[in-house]
Length: 198
Image (cartoon, rainbow, N blue to C red; front, side):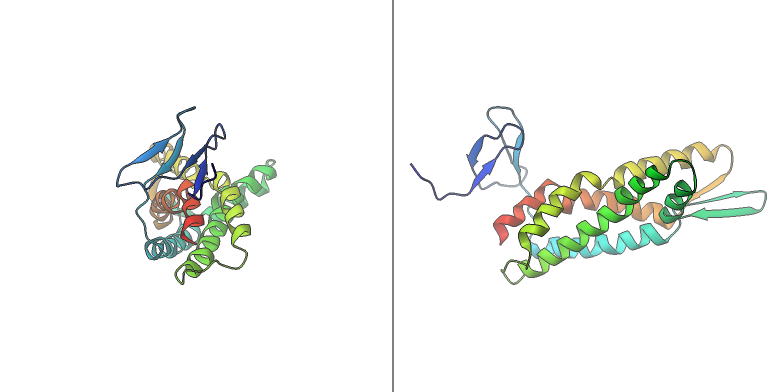
């Protein structure tokens, strides 16, 4: 018997289910493999767009303000994310610099710009031009955005260097920490819900 209800496919085992309306703190699981099918999001289009613009501002702070400052015997130096990528590119591991640039800088900004494009049109209850292309790229970029890995590396560096030098976390590090959490919230798996908003 044919159904007109919206369907959802388990990304782990390809089982097909009818979408359910969820209440706060609820989620649906696949009966076959136990994978999460849906989670309650609770964000309106306006709230998502506001959080995306906030994340864009945080991305600017994280990329153009120092992540940490190091001082020793009156000599002081500070580094941004761009400085770390540049330092990697000058060494023998140039490929790692490219991967770091994609994971820390390029993938997150493309995610944010695509989200702003899609959500700004969704405010008027219409699909953005190139909606399918944007949604595919949002899904493709999600695994490449590794801000939390970058944050963990920066925090380890601060802790390790603290015993040898005077290390001060910068504005960029705090912005990176908040941005990492926000990217999980606005550009995680829940981004698939935008198909239903349109």
